[in-house]
Image: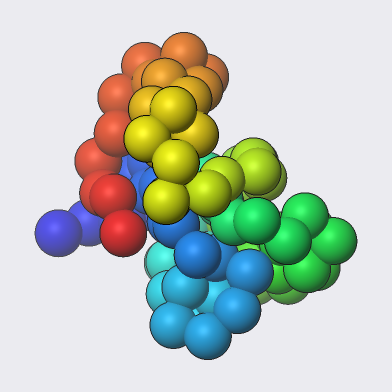
Length: 88
C-alpha cells in the first residue's frame, strides 16, 4: 500500500505503540489524525511527525473508552479529509 498522502487516524498516539506508529506513518508521508487523552504529549508527537515528513498532522482529544469521543474523532477526520484510508 502506498502511504504518501494517505489519511491515517491513529488512536493512543501520545505514547508507546501509537506514538511509534504515528512516527512510522509520518516518515512515509501520510497525512495524520492523532488522537489521545494527553493533549500536551500528543502535541509533542505531532511536532515530531511534522519534522519526520508528514505534510499534514492534526491532533484531537480522544478517549476510546467513550463511544461519543470515538465517533467525534472519526467524524472530524472525515470532515477535514473527506476520507479515511487507515485506522489504527
